[in-house]
Image (tube, rainbow, N blue to C red):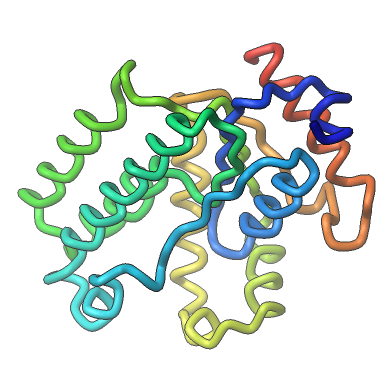
Length: 219
């Protein structure tokens, strides 16, 4: 058992999901937590997605297909983590797909009403039931829009650099609204201004202490 997992009595079977908009550091948090707790990681398999390229060429035609694919893959991944006995840190949650992305397509008209109704009905039947294994904790990474935009520019991904500022503004607002109504599992909110995982070795221990408090107290 890792020193920090033992120190803070983090259960070996815990499944912790990291959520938040683009640029807040979900992947870094996933890697650092998994390393410190000696947990497995679960990352999105983007390269194997057969709809992603088609989707970017024609939102209206492929948005439903893409969201159904994500739903199926995340459902299988979440089920697998629990079947393997837990001990996972997951980058991005199954809940963001419906609460953020599918809803955005419906609001913008790039997913028609019938498809959106079918998608949300399937999501409710598959995920929002007592039988589906929800994470022990969702860590929500948040920050001011200016801080998020600054991080996106620093990492320099071509597609993100070409994305209009209005898109990031809308995504930031949608995430803020989504987390206020999220109740599928306990939530720990962390502001990206309050820690520096890349340069402060003590930051991860402080975060794990907060995780332990949430898991043990079920606040």
